[in-house]
Length: 331
View 1 (cartoon, rainbow, N blue to C red):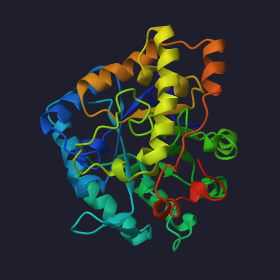
View 2: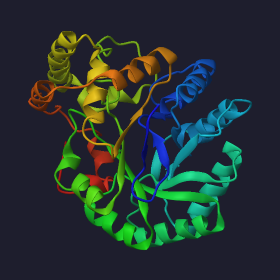
View 3: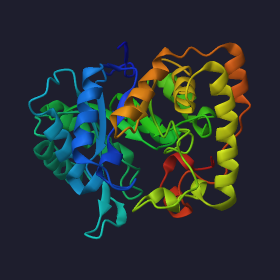
View 4: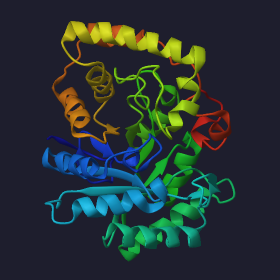
């Protein structure tokens, strides 16, 4: 698989990354053996970037990745970790903590769970309103000097925060939602990243499965937080599934799947944008990898550009208020 540099100051990474969150809940039950097999398959096909968070399954996801890497050739694997989200014993979300002392504690636990001596890209999951971003990034920079972290990233922050962080230490990438139907970063955040030489690791490229071509209105999902997401409810869902049918028509003409078309669109937006695919099964991973063989024509891009935006916020309002990236914007 071809690779691109992750920002001006970062390592080379595969054109697609593997997001491992869904292997540890939130999207309903997952199969541990299949999750590990999917990580192995990703590494075997040349994917080098594995994305996780220390709060995914309250440490479960990091332990899962550690298990997958043991005894498997993974010399080129790069692990990206988010920290700072706080959870209670009932798995509730109770805030964010990016104080330097807390960051060092989170980092120590991640190193232990992952069974590694350094984290390749370390980033706060959200902006902590009680802690200046300069303090957080400065503390991570100390961990870079100490050898425990290789590179610093950010997640879901706005242009001003990006600039302030980058003055303290080079930022290699911004992890943020970006898809055909979530294009809010194009106005200000993406131009800022490009000006500063910061890559975008784009999650939600299939809008959490909404534009995968596999989502239906049928119930029966267990412990799946998407059922509480505005885009998956009521009239919003009807509107969004109608967008998917328009995508399906375009994909059918090209002889590709809806998911492949949506991923190919993100890939076509620039070499500095790395889609992070949340596959937790090998068949979904293989489908996603097929997007690498899809070349979109000018007509394809024009048709997709006119698709329109999703109905409903990408998070519930209570969660949107924690997104620095959403200040003054929605969608």
